[in-house]
Length: 274
Image (cartoon, rainbow, N blue to C red; front, side, top):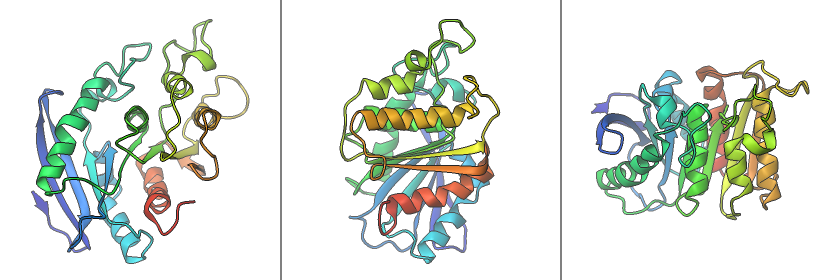
């Protein structure tokens, strides 16, 4: 169904019946109106698409285009989560210590075998200039997992307050070790450098209050900075390949991510990448 609006953004929502997820998946589309040349169109998939509605994502995009802060046309696709979010989002190759993320591999299959083919058919686009993925919290972890394990498909990833703590052993257990049991960090460490990949990480100093190693830095920031170190260790340049946004007053909520998202979009599709 096309949504009525007065901005320069065309919006439409639909439902995809997924065989892999055995449910209907709500999807929202956002793209510039009167787009004549689709050859340079970029695809941005966004987990937790229901949060885009809360942040008035249409207005965020419209302002960036009007201000010419975005130089490349984007087809943004907000994928709504299900009630089974903690099972569908996670890391496809390994659930966490409580078995969460057990359906993440099915979600990955949905993205590649159902969602992207649906998008290409709907908009009559055989290929995109580039593809990127983004997400919030656990949705950010899922986006990073998909991009990291399918670098041939993507060029960028945006992780907002990412659940990078995702671990195979509970942190309260005696044997827990940051270097051994954070699953995504292990994936990066054991992975391979893909020179075209770019990474955007956002954290807020008020994301949480936990500080498991008592170093005066909250866990979400520690986990993100450690992730950046892992990326640097296998060849990524902190200055050119990775953008880190730390917000002093940032909370783990939609209003914070709404303030951060324009920086991600300008970083990824503005006049220059910094």
